[in-house]
Length: 129
Image (cartoon, rainbow, N blue to C red):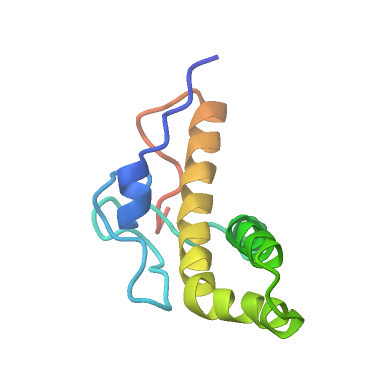
């Protein structure tokens, strides 16, 4: 069994294609491209592909929210503030974490496919094939 390619954290932070590490994944803030403009890798491999990214986004939001709520509770803030904090957190950071959850999901999927396929040079998930 061959080793899986390592995650490239710079490519994740900049939102680049997991295959060529050059093409942008997002068209703009709200839309994901159908394929990489550089290498042609499909960013929409199948219907429902990004449902797993929702779980990743939920995990990232929880990792950000729970320490905030614990800190606020230890500071003995009013209950109204504790009830409003999750909404403020989601409005400020939630959308960013959901965008990055999609990018992380694409990179993880690419890594798993490469590990299962034996790290082949040619990738089978290209548009138009």
